[in-house]
Image (cartoon, rainbow, N blue to C red; front, side):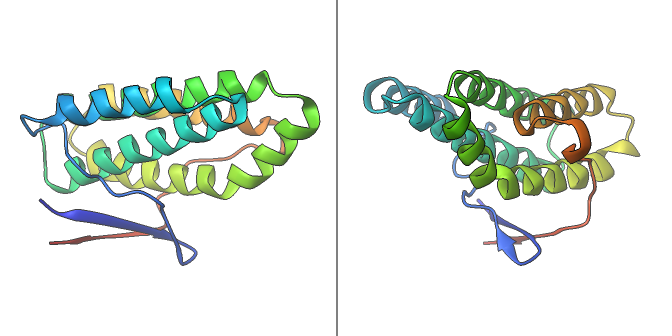
Length: 168
């Protein structure tokens, strides 16, 4: 199984793909993540950060699957899972007091920009194959990403200008 490293402006995404959805033991990975979230994450800010970490892992999974030419339905499901975790993070962020929310958004903004870079790579790699489900999932992710950052003048946009490399 390949590990994918993604860079944007020399910043590496924090997670690796780990166990991919194509593995027979993927359900164990998902169950473990859920248990950690429920049992060991207490504060709203902690839950938001953990949800963002999970979103990033699902995004790197989608990129790895794209690079391995996996079935489009599996890639789409990874992006849907990414968006699920992103939405959950947004729910926790929106419940934070304004000062804490603004501090957290400032802290995670670069990561969210990197996420959009990766979505751009996936979009470029899959657009020529007519994968409309993937495109729709990416557009939903962009909307959620912008909801977290507040949209408006600071709205993030989708681009594919980052590098990704797979290592054995």
